[in-house]
Length: 247
Image 1 (cartoon, one colour):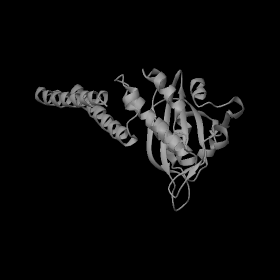
Image 2 (cartoon, helix red, strand yellow; image 1 turned 180 degrees about the vertical axis):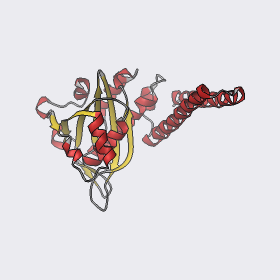
Image 3 (tube, helix red, strand yellow; image 1 turned 120 degrees about the vertical axis):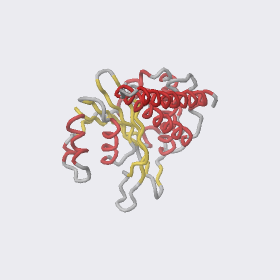
Image 4 (spheres, helix red, strand yellow; image 1 turned 30 degrees about the vertical axis):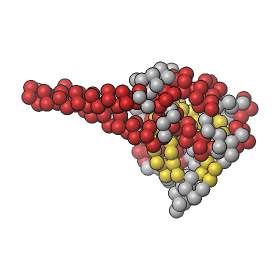
């Protein structure tokens, strides 16, 4: 966390480290029971590290009829066990109205989650989830140093563009995990990066599914057919990363 706090240039007097009590989630009528169980079973404790406000980072707030970026919360969650980071991120973002930069800690690993959300026009709450991104064990990414340097210079027009730029660069970090081309990838529009990420996730799911089916299949003919499908998905994956090298 120290590296991240340095990157966001948060002075010591603005570091809060305030505990967020889990009963805030347990007792909420806005959460379903499985979401409350996620907090009980997977979360050890939650800390509000800091709140990025216009007067702290000298970036104006932003608000329109669809979105509200008045301040950005930095939250750290210590996990009891791994495996449900995306679902926990959704739960936290449903309950906390601010845009959130969310960190998960588990043993020596630190993961990062960002969430795009918008205002619910019926309730006025800033909790309609548009997209959730989770990068596990970010300090093991080979381009992490380039990433940390790049987010020292996020778009400071307003807090919305600041967060969106962080979002874009975080997608670029994920997509550059197998190609040494972070700088070029990070200049691509967010929509292109999200599309490439979605394609990659679909390919990876297919590859895992075919591998599992091959292990369980006893018929030689069907194993051959599954292997052919697996190779096709692996070629798609290779092609995607080759295209990312060329951006």
